[in-house]
Image 1: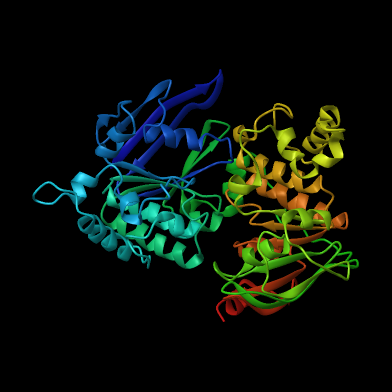
Image 2: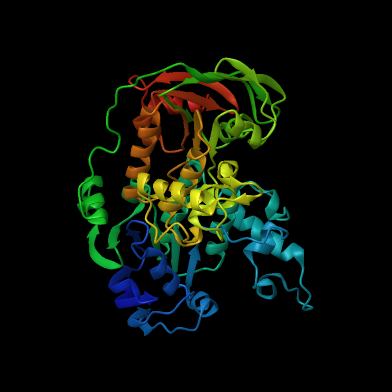
Length: 495
């Protein structure tokens, strides 16, 4: 029996159709995957379902009744909740206060009518226990990791006792252990008749958790199939309209001279005694579970944090990197896992973001040479195949894959000898991933040393020439591409 039926849903922005006669039928107690590349219309459809925007035409029937356009609170009361990919929290409020924001009277009021934090905290503790998150309900959100924040968002959605929960990339920032917990929760929700609309760019998740798959492409409805009818290649073909070549083509490694090495690098509470080197033309993968120290090592190499001990060598020369400016001067580039937080400035244009790290090359006295700036930006747009209306378009209006290419372009324009890519394909669709992979391989082919940090083991195995495995801040293995397996990496990652 369908709990939600969408028919001929259409939505346009400035004359461009984001959705064109889209349909979807969601059964009670079903996990329904909504798939498509960035720009396919998934986000627009989800925004309509939760009341963030209204459709131009079409109808939505929920529990046998037409779903009106009365906004988010109306949808919540009717039983539709959403876990957004962009974590929406108030940092200065506690975990419990964030979970029950706007419902304090309902949850925390005493018999005398006063709000009691103890009531809210008690209910929040139950929810946190249910999802296996070991943090205090009275801890301020600003003190949590991104993964913990994401789990709090999941607790918040469950607390609404929704009949339909929309999960938009819910695993993009959580560890494998937390993913297992999330899937357990989803199965429990299914058993209680709760329906889930699930989006993810991680194919393995879809085939593990989804019952049904609906694919959108360029705002159009492509089809709906049972997940058991599909395999990875068939799903990719539906999403992109073509078969992709091997995602990780074999390449010959022309390893050159040593570009960067670290010796006995340590930072208290983060990692200890880390040593490795990376050569020109080589892709070195860094693998490990969340908290293993991968990003923390990258931040020290790039000068964002300081090591307590150990040394960094560039081209065999011992180098002190006290800041990102020092790193850039010494030929180190860094693409952060948090591209929206520190990778780019959303309100600036593509051109302005690309040249941020290399403005000194575009000076005319005390002024910026805008002609020179525009020329290099437009060349990068062509070289990296960035889909934009022009170099003056604001980055905030680009898809995730194109935003990531802008960040990579910014780093490349500073002429790095080594580039650190931290989760470069997180939250990016399968077609854009393929292009990022080709870009990374091209960088290595041009003699740049690449350090690739990724939580996706197929990505690490498919892209890396060697793989450094970390566990709890320690180096546990260095594996060659041809000998490494997922099982072997996991064995060393949990040591």
